Structures are given as C-alpha cells and as structure tokens.
Image: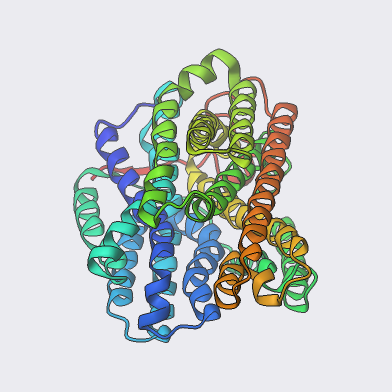
Length: 507
C-alpha cells in the first residue's frame, strides 16, 4: 500500500460519503412511510415488519463476503456496482404493486448495500495515508452515517406528505446516478492480484451466523426473548458461529484472521462502536415516539427536533482527530462514549424540549468524538490490503448495535409499560395508541392519563438502560484500547496477506 495520499482523495471522500448516505438514509426514511404502506398495499403488521427487516437481513448477512470479494476483485468496481444495484432495487420498490414485489425489491437493495458499505470505508483507507488526514476522513465518514439516521425522519416526512410512499425510493435514483457517474471518473481502482481465493464455505457460515443472530434480535421484541422462534434462531447463530470459527482455524485462506478477533484493540474498538450505535439507535427509537406522544409534535416536527444531533456529530467530528492526538485513542473513545451516555440520560428524564435538545447535542458530540478514533483503531488491526474485510467487520458490528439498541430498549420499555397497566385490557397494554383508543371509545378518561404516565416512565427507564450500556462501553474501551494506535500496525500480517504487493491502478 502506497503511503502517499491520492491526488483525488477529497473527491473520492465526497463520492464515498454520498454513497454511504444513500444506504443509511434508506431505512430511516422508510419508517415514516409505514402508515401509507399499510393502507395502500393492504399490508399486515408482520408484512410491514418484513419490508423493513429483509433489507437488514440480506445486508448484514453478506457484508463479510462482500468485503473479501471487493479486496480480491476490485473495490471501486464492486462498490459502484453495488450502488447501481441498490438504485435498481429502489426503482423496483417504487414501482411495486403488492407486498411480495416490495419485499423482493428490498432484498435487492440489501444486496447492493452490502457491497457499498464496506467499500466506502476501505476506499477511504486506500486513498488517505495513515495519520491525521485519514482520521479526519474517517470522522467525515462516521458523521455522514449519523447524519443519514438523524435526517431520515425529516426527509421522509416531507416526501411522504407531498409525494407518497414511493417517493422515499425514487429519492435514491438520482443520488445513485450522480454519485456513480462521478465515482467512475474520480475514484481509483484497487485490487490485490496476489490475494487468496475467497473462502466460500467460510462466507456461507459467516452469513448464516449473522442472519440468524440479526433475525433473533429483530424478532425478540415481537415474540419474546425466550420464545421458540427466537431461541431457535439464537441456537442456529451459535451453531453457525462455531462452524465459522472452526472453518477459519483450518482453512488455507481464511475469510477472517482469528488473530484479529483476539486482539484487545479490535475488541475494544468494535465493542465501543457497537455500543455507541446501540445508544444512538435506542435514543432515536424512543425519542421519536415520545416527542409525538408526550410533547404533541407532528411527525415532521419530531424529525426536525431530532436533527440537531446530526449537526453536533458533524461539528464534533471535525475535532476528533485533534482530540485523539491530544488524549490518545483510549482517552478520545472513552470520553466520547461517556459524553454520549450523559446525553442519553438527560433525554431519558427530560421534562421539556430544551432538556431534550441539550441531551441530543451531547449524544451527537459523543458520537462524533469517539466514532472515528474507534474505527481507525479497529482498522489498524488489519493491513490496508485487507481493509475491505476490516471495514465489513466494522459495519457488521454497527448493524448488530443498531438492531440490539432498538430490540433491547424496546423490549424493556414495552414490558414496563404493560406491567404498569396490568389491570387493563390487552389492547391498552400492547401500546399507548391502544390505550388512547380505549379511553375515547369507552369514555374512560383516567386510562389516557395512566397510559401516558406509564409510557413516559417506561421510556425513561429504557433510555436509562441504554445510557448505562453506553457508559459500560466507555469503561470497557478505556480498559482494552491502547493509549495510541500506531498507523499501519496490523495483527497477524502473515495470515492476512499484508506482504502482498498492492495492485493499484488509478482511474
């Protein structure tokens, strides 16, 4: 890997950031369209859940294989190809007339996104030399990821209100065309001609373990963590995980170097990122509901009210490299996670929007300060020649963190809410909306007040749990991450091909 930065690196960063924004924005925008999907496609609750989740399952399951394939056959080729496939899936989704067509289109989008996501980060690593400039580029990458999550409800609210649910998919098409067109010109190609063949059995086992685990996490809030479907999926994930580990130990060319997984730096950075995304996902999941239900905001107002977190991420990301230089990797990641935890706790018991705003700004600052040094530390455990695989591992951990944040905090909040209303009918215990309908239809005025109090308390406890988890991540990161990450240092280079000559070809 050439240590010199690429002359078109800033253009490349812009293209990769736009590519990332397209796929991250996808789900947060879609959530706003769910009520229209139910009405116009006559979709059941279960079908709507799968319209959202099939994307995540395909995406998460193929990340590791996609990263390895791109390392071997060309990062630019597969990243831009994945982006075009994502755009095609978006067109098919917008044109869908029934749930089955939309499910198939969403699966195509997930397939395309699996090649885009790791490619964006590995190409950034490819064109920026190790040091402060790469740190700033990774900070931009992390900030764009948070931006996509935060502005999704705003963009979705505007589109659905004025143009209907199909517009949330049409939005992707011009973004894909412009980004891929510019990318063909400015992004350099890279592949390792001496790379080992892709371990297909290992890729299949890794995909099975990831899909089963993500499925269990998604289904747990619906069926319960000890229900047969969830326990069966968890058992399948464990079995496939053991099979994957055994395969990696004996394969001549393993998909993942197990020495990386045993690295304290990898462990601290990956868990830190996972729990950081856990906290952000849990916060946005609970807060979007609370702003509308307890504070009386419209969906669009709620989206606008959450948007400051994206501004905070963007601003603080600009200072992440300087803070890491001053405090070191351990200090920057630990401080960022602690600030994010404090912000989540502030939001949990906020009595008004100004307190919510203060908490959101703290969450955004914590995210911006810790995401890039943690990501850089994680990537330091693999050589640049295998950064596609390293990026895919990082993305898989973040996907798990997002799913866990919604599932765990959603489960805790729902259980507390239901227990507080144990004497009421099942419809009232299942959701606040059900309790409010019961209050209107049967004239039981006290039910609405009780349900609102129960929801507020349950949401506060759920977010307190999220804050505690993120704070535990700060402690864990401080205990496992090195004080400083040496640029270019990698674990087990003889196993992952660090000595292979890179086959860079500019274009």
